Length: 318
Image 1 (cartoon, rainbow, N blue to C red):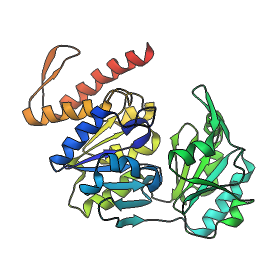
Image 2: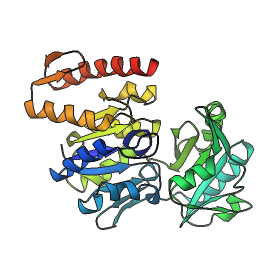
Image 3: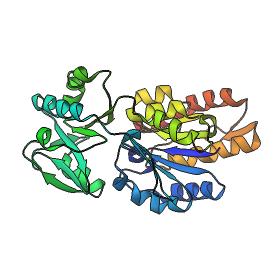
């Protein structure tokens, strides 16, 4: 294994947006062994810098993959390895198009997240009601800036348009939102209430292929962790793609394996199993069933994935 690819929200961090001590310990140990960490998120760089510092990625040539792959940065040198911005005419057309829907776009400008009405973005998700603009700005360490009309305001390069909306409304209307831009933009959900729009062809998998190939790291030497729709291409890219127990069903369906959820050190547990398996090559013990499994690589992952789905689904159903 040469690289560990990590989504942030719902994966690397728990529900309190923190990296647990055990997950940090295991990831720090991986770096000591020469394994490179890659944080791959829909967030801008400012929103993942604190996690990079906590993991000391700036001392180990870690990578930040931001805006779902529109920008890739070397943590140690600060070099921007990839920077793909949206076509200006498409930005304007998209922002104009969004006006007919009950959604709230956000764009990033320097230290600001720019919106049209800072008070008009109340979202209810999983029983909690909050201001979506405030949630995103605070989570990513940005200030909020209000303008009268985003479509006429944006005359500078941007990497992404983030669309915020009520979860049910977004599910019912995302196809209509996307329709005029099929084949022109990449569009995907990153949470129940976030729908992201970037340049065509931008996704985590494509960005990882481009960035890691320059470093001599092949997909087969990577393990990836994710939970949401924007993680699917990353899990498909990696030699081993692992879904968190809290992942969306479509993510679990394409994953090679499944681990515990983001509140119970899912990453650390999976890396421990992966390390034991690759070190022993043939023998792995699944303590929950008190059995020894002696299998070859893909057969092991197929059975382990099935066992994990049963175990973690039972816990989430309780």
